[in-house]
Length: 355
Image (cartoon, rainbow, N blue to C red):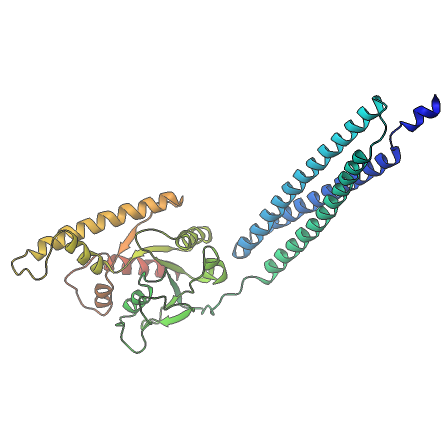
């Protein structure tokens, strides 16, 4: 009778081996979690290096997410282990003979637990490597693309293709688009490399930054070295516009929102509301006033909505005509003006405060 009973006992050696494997998996997962937390704490301790913070913060967030994922895997392994133990206890109570299918299932669960432990160890190693890379970048610092010259007021002009960056730079410098030393303009993106454009007034420099996606526009191009940033926008913000404005606030860099080509937009609106340039009897001044008022109202409303959607505090938008701006810079008084004088005045005040 006793011999018959011993044949029904479970394979306690296999169960102990499974428990040891589970314990190793839990220990490895816990070590990985602790290591990930230390990596996040190390990244947090270096947040005062704001110029390099973006990459370090992303690495720390990845480590935290990795710790959560490993914790979920550990919980799943524990649930599988509990299910296996319950099945073994039920099998012992009922004194059933071990079946080959049940043995294969338990073996598969043990192998799954071992694989989970190996993945956790590898992911912990990758998290450590990521933390070390983040620390190295913090030590080395982000290298600006262009040299920051002491004694000058550096202004970056940014914006998507076709927003009028190059024409705006030329207007600031008192240049026409066709001048030999003017920034290239075109319907396609003509500022795919960072370029420096000196102002005839030696107190400032204007640059057209590289077009790159999202937040990397700010960090990779070293925009944090500039004294002021002009963001040239269209009717709606892009992800790059939001990233630049947000990072400029974080670094305490004055940022100006500018919508250029005002004269072109107003002419288009004049046509939309019925103005015909071939009609000699048409009241051009009346159409212009209506189109101008509509353009100003729609632009301000649109920019305010964009700022709210991006969780950025409200700030003014400068509506300018590059033609009027170029004339103003060269000492002329254009007949039709928008915010050109205010933009130049506010930029000059910002430069004076910088000095």
